[in-house]
Structures are given as C-alpha cells and as structure tokens.
Amino acid sequence: MADRRGDGTRQPPFSSAQDRVFDGGGGGGSGVPGPSPYGGENIDQGSYMALLAAGVRPQPPWAVVEDVTAPPPAIHMTPHFSMTNYASPSYQHPDSLAAGLHPYSSYLQAVNAPPQWLPPPTPSSYLQPPLLPNFVVITEQQHHQQLLRDAAFGGSSGTHAAVPATIEQPAKDGYNWRKYGQKQLKDAESPRSYYKCTSDGCPVKKIVERSSDGCIKEITYRGRHNHPRPMEPRRGGAGAVSSSGGDNAVADGAAAEVMDEDEPTDDDDGEEGHDRWV
DNA sequence: TTGTTTTGACCGCAT
DNA sequence: TATGCGGTCAAAACA
Ligand SMILES: [Zn+2]
Image (cartoon, rainbow, N blue to C red):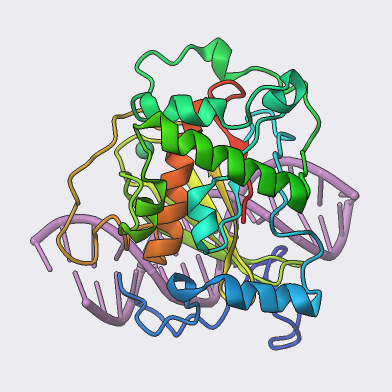
C-alpha cells in the first residue's frame, strides 16, 4: 500500500514530484552510478556560476551558514566544487566570529589534532546549548578574506600546508557511508540523500542535498563517530570509501574530508553542526 | 558472498 | 483532528 499520510497516495501519481524519489534509474543501483544523473564529480565552478548568473541561488553560494537550531547541532556544508572550495573550507564558527578569533583557528587545530573520534566524549560537551544565532552568513567579500587568511595559515601550518593537494586526492574522509534513503523535499530543487556511517553502532548520519544540476548544495553531518577512523577501504571496488556514502566520490569525499577536519571543531557546539561553503 | 544503492512504503512530528 | 512533510526502513537489484 501506499503511504497513508506522508507519501504518494495523497496525490495522484504524476501530479507532482512529491515524495517521489527522483528518477533514479530504477532499482539496484551500483556503487558506481556511472552515468549518474548527477555529475557531481565533474561539477565545477562554471556550472555553478552559470546558475548564479541565472539568479538561481536565493543565497550567495559562498555564504557560510552555521545552523545550530537543533539541540544537537548538525554540521552543514555546502561544497561547490572548485579549487577554492578545497583550499578553504569556509567553515566559520559563530564562536569565532563573536570572539574575533581566526575563523579557522579551530580548523587548524583540527588539522593537527587526531581525527574526530574523541575517546571519552564528555556528554556535557555534547549538549552545549548553542547560545548562538541560528546561522551566520558571510558575504563574498568576507569569504575572500577568509580565503586569503586561510591560504596564509595553510601555508604556514605545515601540517596540512598543501591543501590544494587535497583537491587532487581521491575523495575520502576515512569513514564509510551507506546510503539508506533519498527524498525529494517539497521546496527543494534537489533530492536529499541520507547516509549512515557503516561502522557498527556508529550513529553518525550524513545528509547530502544537491541542486538540480547535481552540485552538492549542502551536507549535514549529524552525530559523532564513536570509533576511530577506519583507514582501510572496505572493499576494493564498489565499497570503497569513495563510492560508499560518497555518491559522488570527489564531491562527497572532498566535502567530507574538509568536514572531517572541521568536525573536531564542532566539539564546541555538540555532535551536530551545519556548515556551508562554496 | 558481501556490501551498497535504489526506491516505495512506513512512521512520527509539526502545523 | 487531519494533513503535510521529512526521515527511516527494508526488499530487490547490482557490482
Ligand atoms: Zn562512524
């Protein structure tokens, strides 16, 4: 039967894309979407800029949104694939903003710090109430400044100096993800994909939202990994880190990779966080 | 054989 | 109260 309330039945078939998962190509996908409807991997600034030119975006893509509405804030990221993206994760903590700290200070810490798995996660730190604005949006100009600063920091940090190198690297965040759902949201131009960390007992979930052109528009991480990063690929082929959870290897991986470095930062806020960057 | 993706359906919360 | 909506489940298909 169809869904009594939430889904299809409420509306005649075809009447709307409501709740209808986008035409995924029918069943049994594969680790390699191959000719995927979304060429996420190949999305570059160009297509995105085209959208901008068309005025598609309601909001500047370079905007950094720190959404901390949810009690357990989630990490939100909006990667749009360009060299700049990778070179500078425009993650900016409201804390940092308020305190006037370097927006990437925590990020830099994260670079030097061990992965996001924190052995004894103090519950208190989890539940810090975000006494912060729901989100913070920075302008393009600010973003540029961040890029410059970030570049400077990246170059001097030494640990992760070759940030641009990350761009060349295959997608990987060290964690394995399994897609467990996809949903076409009502007002969203893009379907939203839901991923879970495949590690046993790990509650972490990842929500990937794309734009109509296949660009990853937003990535939301929820929860905290309760395990160290599994560095070895699960499988040689489809199950590899890049394909798992990274419906598009480069996109997701890159996003996740930056994310990964960001995530320790989020310790400050909790187990979830939102970030968005170009 | 194992693990992932796809996708329709189900469930619970918010309005 | 009823409905809308988002998140999750689970079977089937696939690599
Ligand atoms: Zn995990």
